[in-house]
Length: 596
Image (tube, rainbow, N blue to C red; front, side, top):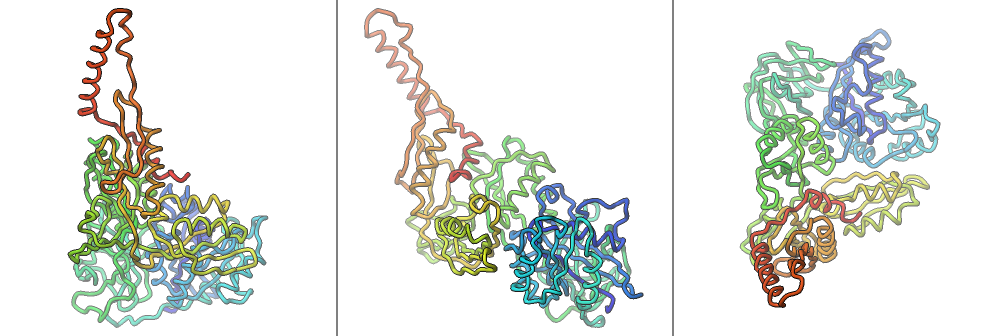
């Protein structure tokens, strides 16, 4: 095991992590000149466009130093707050971490939170100052930030450029010299940590793991600790750019397992693999079931595409076990699915993938979070949909999820950021100056308040300088009510939201005003109302398109005109009873942009 080094790369979005990984693969000869391209490890077009690693990868490199050959296992990490659990499992599989920091931007929120995870797992931290080839680089200023955060010496910080390849040789030498080799007992019972899974349309789910203790051979009967399911190891091997089968893998190795698993639900990230006949005494610590935090209804624009949408979501779930869905129906939108996501970015990516990979045009309802409702009879209900909330006569109280949010920004934007967070019912917990002009603010705030437009507004008030990281901190009792939107007395379930009582009146008024602009006029009046229970709190009316039926009466008796008007009245009354109001797609999207 002395010649193995397992490490990961930690970085904020767009700090050059994937480009630096390209140079490491290039210098170690892992990727041939023919296969070389930018961001080799980012397979999806979406990842390349947004500069975010969505699906983490693992790859093995061979490197020679001082006449000895070393095996370097790079376990990549996703680059967004929504995927923090996957990052923690990747970190748990390593002994060292490269902390990549952009020399032009300095330390950002995501870097700090992932760095704390790495320190908790006792990883050897190697700070790397990337993008040193840019004129805007501020190496001395950013080094001060790193020294204060990591507590290392200035000499330990490596200067590099993923674009030009400067300093990458030094990084490889430091990985070999500073990252400790893996520890583990080859003769102990098998204990391997699952840090990811990938779907292969021909062979099922490929499980990616790191062996902590013991060994695994091809054909072994293994079981997964959390699900208790048993599988035959049909094929095991190591991961380079392609899979390389092996007969045996042992402690310290990173590899893959294929056993014909059909559903991603059976493979849980963070689970432990062990032998059926000689199991390990306890599972690896840190495993938890990933729970969705944001919920939204997803409906096909054409109701006939319902089955096609079901098939598309099922295929997406094969690659992403954290996507949750169940069928639901809506009076306004027909049949669709209630989907659960890890966060707003996860939701955005899923909708984008449905559009690109499956050509599915969908409408999504207002995103909301998962609440706990306590009834007077002592029951506890989990409410993912506003319509599942019990009535006021049954409901005792509601608890909503809270998050601890870290915002890092330039000090000149502190006032505007505080106004935004406090306006979203946030409480300032801590204010810490990283340097004279960079400040870290910690807020405790309801998750439901940030699922609309919080991130966009944070970026606009700070001119793009602020970075956000958050994690769920628990549930708190809240004064929430369900706000319904009625069209001609009929509730539109897809526009219902759970909202804090203090914000309900202004939100209801804005909703009615917005819908008045968007709903086309009919031949009868349309009443748009916002209601809390039976109480109407706001109203707008879309006036009828009026046709003058008396225009053809020139001269003659007044009774003729009256007769025509009475006839029109009866027609209007009948129309109001049987007429349908079409809610255009923009109305559902407009809810998300109300504050802008």
